[in-house]
Length: 166
Image (cartoon, rainbow, N blue to C red; front, top):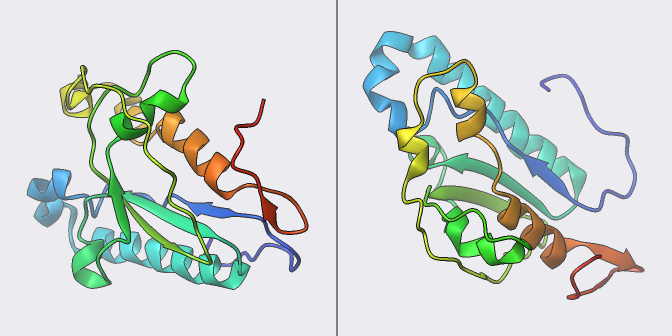
């Protein structure tokens, strides 16, 4: 990621998900044990995401949970909970809370919410220890992903369609 650039040309959309393990405030109690190198590495990867996003000259979002990035760089442009976009799914889903931050640019369009009740609460904090716990915690909510696509996809000649794709 640090040494790669996408081919130059029209890019419709860019999304970046830099690792959050060493910057998310949910893990702040372990920061000292991890050491300064872990923080430097995490912030470096976030910085590369910012540079790539701006280089693409396309609508973009950089996603991370509530983290120290706000302290070291700037506050996010948007925050959301997955349940705010659960209504974009055919079957009810994403009925949980997990405050997530977005840093955006390049004419990114934040989608309109279509909420469902957060009946699962803050389920991410309740996941038991497992080999794939970190992966489960970092999954992009499907309803939000669909909403971002609908709000930002381009059909032709720069005309954005508000209609939901089939």
